[in-house]
Figure (spheres, one colour):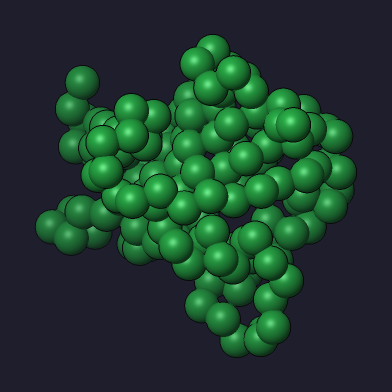
Length: 138
């Protein structure tokens, strides 16, 4: 049983050279919104933005929580859901930061991959939050 369900997304604007990340935290019922947030990062990829969105959501969780994170970024679901085998993975700094944070907060995290733009309502909310952050759309 999980205490929270989290959805994350990352985006990138080539023309503006900025990325954005977003997350939505729900109670375990999958309907009750606990928190949502988005942010802009400069000169970083959508992949790093997604990883940073996951880390930001982890910061927002209470210690000793259990959460299931839904992401449309397969690399994140695979890399964060298991121990790294190689130290030269892309974005190893964020992977190590994530693992240290989870250990420090004594969290139990499970990852699930969802298809991008697959029509899942909360994944679409995250996608819209990223677009709003990138382009100031409201």
